[in-house]
Image (cartoon, one colour):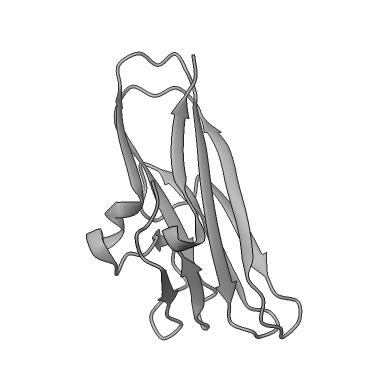
Length: 138
């Protein structure tokens, strides 16, 4: 699964020092970056893979996060921090991979993003071949 948007900007003018659903202003209000599931027997852990591309503002000290949250739209279960030590224009393509203990009942895994609170961040969706997958192993 991937976001159908080519790219979107996490605006620094908004209160962007909070964790929120990835591309929350896009089609589906971020729900297009969510995997929902029902588990009847809590036997197998889940493997979560989240691929993403992000580019913070070209300012020394700018940073941003991307990752995912279990049953949360504002708290990371696993994330990656991208921090610029120098004022350069650079993009990063990464994968966050993690494991979630066996669960029972209805749950969701939400792709999340967070800026540094003052600067814009550019994120890319499916056009950059980024994905979101959840695997249950036996």
